[in-house]
Image (cartoon, rainbow, N blue to C red; front, side):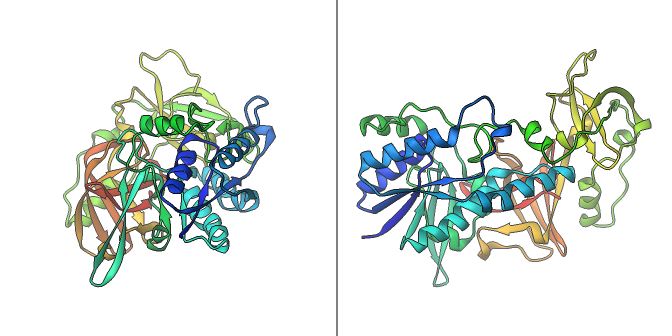
Length: 395
């Protein structure tokens, strides 16, 4: 009998994951991960992890499976929280959920599971796994979930072949309503429970409050850049080759204070991210202002009016070699090779047509249509059909 450790989070998805595996005849063990918790930045007096671990325990009892809580707060602080502070300080925007899967659930947690003699680790992600023997070697594929509305393959875009080989995603074939229905039929306490929001396992955290613990507020100005800023209208040079063209289009606009007018003040450029419109507190414009760039060295926020402002859009992005990750190592591009794919730069974004260009020092992703708020530090992930082939951190 194969043994599976399920990350029971106290939500409906992981509860049904455990239930289905037990029905399929696996020996199931439930583990609740207690990750980092800091009362000073959670909203109100809710203590989400206590409530969640309690729900997880009740589900385990109902299913008659062993259950324990593991405290991963130290690793979580080191690998996720400190990394986030560091990235925000540099003016980049990290994605904690992607990192949490790579660094915690499928690394630290997986090690614990394997030490308990597990053959597999299962999570309640809406995605699927397939395998195929290619040149005598088993290759694992990461596929989008059946429920297109809930597909979470993007969050797993940094998994390796080895991690995938030991992963199970039992609810990937189901839709969210079906999952809730199964939970109801099985009389699981989590059947009606709302989906959790906020950082992966941190609970309900206000991001600015969270960042303010480490990153000191410092007052700076908000500058509004006009639509006719010279760099938007200058003529495009002639390119000697494709790489020069990609270099040109992947370079972001450079702004200086004198390029626009000062329209307000802020408490720290590192609290803001490209594409953001909340929290600027500047009135008097016809359409809302959006952050088009942050300069953390000069502590200036550059904004543009309306969501179609030219400063928000770019067609090409670059990923350096050391930030590049192939889920399908057998399909990795060699220098000068290209591939037609579909890609996304954030979780809920519909897939967009794009071309990958491999160059010596990294990889360009050229979108057919300009993309709004391409933000350094975020992950770009690319697909062929339903399959996620690889990803990288936008540089």
